[in-house]
Image 1: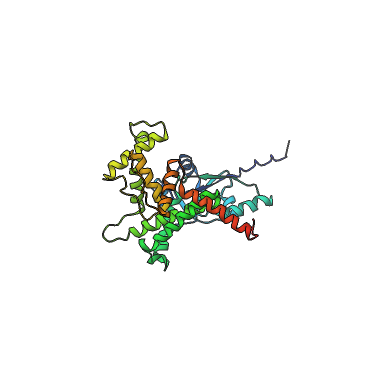
Image 2: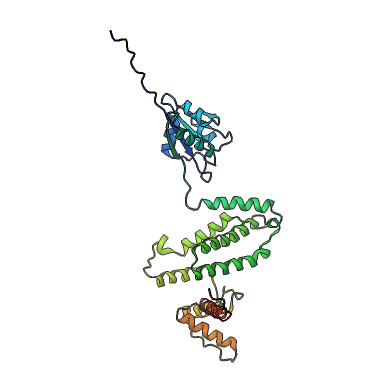
Length: 328
């Protein structure tokens, strides 16, 4: 008679699913794999009782236990092949994952299967929601920002636009990304101030809605039945729809006279040339008229006179530095 006891069957270590969600997506909008994991889990845990997903999970019949177990306790909970879903907080439960990593590295226990399951993803542009939230708080709590007005910020908009142009012309990608952010901040800041206007308030959503409608209307070859196969045809569509929208009497209407002089001259020349008008340049003597003639010639040749002068200015700056012995 064989009295040797059979070896005990190995105990299945179970499974831990760390469920991550994006706070930039409406709560409850979870992926199908996430819902499957939640409904099939033996236990669902969440350390944050105010987690925005909890009401929606409970509404579907999922029982969520508010608990923050240690790594050891969580592994014990999985014993016997159980599956535990942990609904992660905004930080992604770093203390728990670090504890699980240390436990696995110790070799003391049989570790359950660990799966990171993204339950919702950020859509393109989702970080703009973070920017709006940060701007709201700064506007409410910062002594300087809370006092700013459209007029007070105007000069910063000009400065940031120039710095953006410089980053583009210098070809510095890191600087370009930063300067684009600074320009975007100006847009969000002005829109936030505009919300507080007692007579005609508007929000960043209104700003975005306006430009979306404008882009769709001015691109009938993309969103409508019109056709355009060349950049020139696209420009014709743009100018035609813009003229209809603005109902301007003169081709010079809407040109900001406060812009830099060379840019102003080039814009006037562009409008005149596009309209097919034959308007001779003033024959008055003087440096201003000589610059006007140069700007008109540059525009006709497809050269941005402002950019050309800045490039020449940088070359002159480098020559000055070389003369001072400051090369490099």
